[in-house]
Image 1: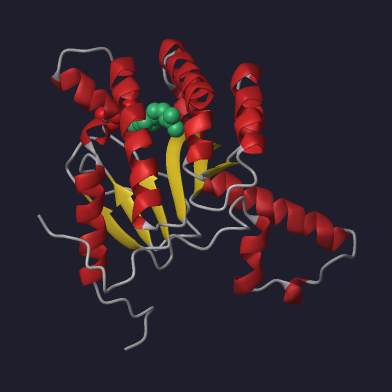
Image 2: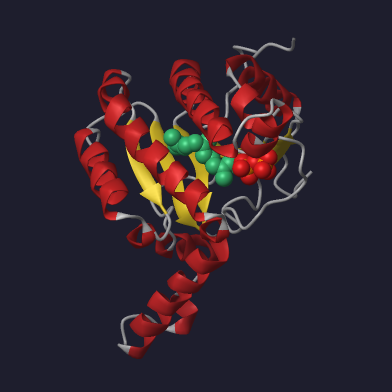
Length: 239
Ligand code: FPP
């Protein structure tokens, strides 16, 4: 197995499209929600591993704006799982110096999930190790349109002129304003799609796709992705 090279930098920010929970369950004759439950164990393992490896930001695509279209039982299962996970794991997030943040249209979440989310965000706000962004009810096009609406309003109110908007400051209007762009984007379960995830932010990210289903994705797979990242030559369009 390729190893992380301690002489080379690790990605500062890793973003993950956690895909394949349903297929993992199906291949074992289990219900889809069992795949999500096993996926939550991978979430825990990857958070811990990122902290140990020295990654500063981890963004996990946990629920997309399109996922609301799934059957009610699956949506409820995912929301329940999220709430349960946060309730159970807040103390270990604190112990591991992890700061939780959220991106997405969180106002769409059920009250119980939202209030637990806010509790964990507050309880971990002073931590300065890994910053964990969970993308919930997240869609990148929605995020961009929301940013443009804010800017149009500011312009109408005379607070900004069109030429004051730049490639550098547009990001200040996105959910990820406080976060550097991802260096590495990982997608599990072998699909070659971005699925409306961080479209603006991944302009220069390295993309790593593995066939491994998310519930099977653990530290060794993460290290393999980081080792692959370290072998690539990053030029940002230059020579
Ligand atoms: C994609 O698999 C995964 C999701 C839609 C949900 C991700 C959620 C978790 C891993 C668990 C809870 C998260 C946290 C942060 C505790 P899929 O269902 O689309 O799989 P398929 O493509 O094989 O059907």
